[in-house]
Length: 274
Image (cartoon, rainbow, N blue to C red; front, side, top):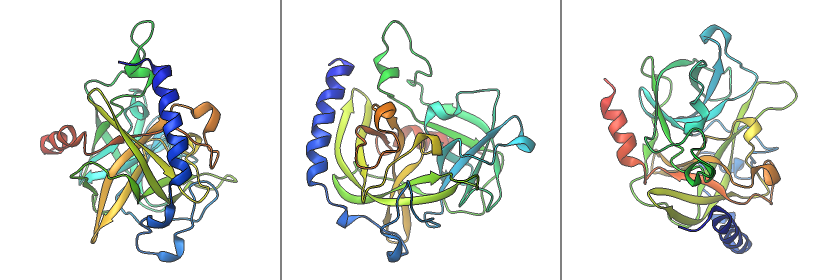
């Protein structure tokens, strides 16, 4: 296997090349055509994509931090949500799931966390490629009760095609107000198989950007098939985060785990929940 540095450099070059020819014109704008120009950073609220929600964190359900989103999360069954595994490694913290803008609806407590068995929460050894490249950063969470205020998203049934046919979901916190959900048309630029870990590169269009301080990690890219919301992948963080995070037009290596590649893991989790 190539070194992490070689992978990052070669992938960045591909991303730069692909970004130059990618077009947002095919982005899925959901139910509201007027919102096709909204951005993850500096954009308009988006109330669509009902299964796409968030996690709040705190010492207990009575002491959740409602000022910020801990991470994005997506409902995939009435009692199961999926997020980035590194979002929920703190076992002393209580997490709760909600949808819509923060504070706009009910919350359900997370009672179980199941990270992918190959996920490395901390580096193992002098150099851990699995940890460095955020491989296997997928977890499903079991909720205390079934969600009755949003319909679950469906898992994608095929590899995500390259092209501008997805919508990136994110969050925005500004001026002390409660976080609000936003979206932007986005383009899948290429797909990479890192051993058993399927990832793909997504660039939000129209000058938008993902931002980890707003809780965008764990958030999905989705598309619509008829009246169904389909979960294509989840954002697990950019390799170049310290240099490019939150900066529109400069983001490279926006790592998304493909939900097609983790379909067996997630469906087994859904089946195990009574």
